[in-house]
Length: 278
Ligand SMILES: Nc1ncnc2c1ncn2[C@@H]1O[C@H](COP(=O)(O)OP(=O)(O)OP(=O)(O)O)[C@@H](O)[C@H]1O
Image (cartoon, rainbow, N blue to C red; front, side, top):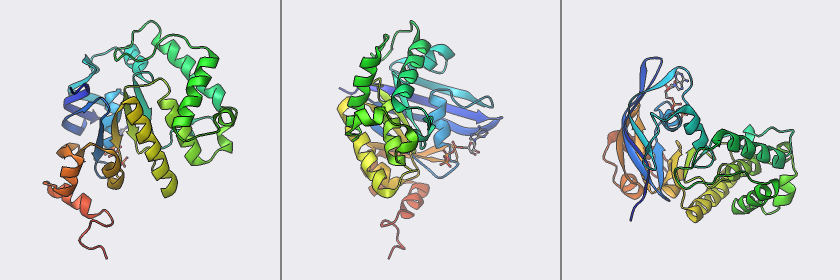
């Protein structure tokens, strides 16, 4: 039986009175990846940020509902919403690895980040069965080394004691993904998670992320302008144009039989798919 993790219905978002997203509707089930495609400026990142109300001071949700594990997020208190970050909803950005402080050891930063999360959570009970309770440094380290191994980082002990500045961009991004998955979130919001990496690292990191996600049965919203990545990763895709979903469905169906002209043009621009390719 399907388990709905995230349901977005009729979502509209404005920045400074300008409508950026209109009437967005889609859902994500446990273990499922839903890809969001669209050109630059179509509103992909805004959509991810709106889920956790991270649009900043000039952004606001002007309509619709966002439900996570049956709980309405749009009306939830700021404190409870922040407590979901990490343990129930993980986020990965293009520069997740780069957001680590380059001159402090990775292990110390991970412990600090878990402690900060525990403090934010306070007595708030997890809503998706996520993890709670204070962990010892040993527990945090064991969990992290397991996550490092999941992300293809075999020498976890060395990485735990390393400075980010001594690791490659690909390794730092893996560390960032391991950190986002550390507390076993049931939903992952990923915004261009590999686009800062070279092509070889990109393919490797995507494979590892996909294996980890399948092992954990994590639902994922994956935003990228790279349709080849969506073809490999997404079960379903939604195509965003000027803040409107113009088409959505199973990835294979949308890619093989696009209905909307905009989707057809996006796909035609992918090397190997276009009419004008040599
Ligand atoms: N903080 C903000 N204040 C005002 N406008 C914003 C803000 N953030 C985004 N926008 C506007 O919202 C629109 C959508 O931006 P968004 O970053 O969501 O697009 P995107 O599809 O993710 O683009 P890209 O692929 O280039 O990251 C753009 O017109 C952008 O200028």
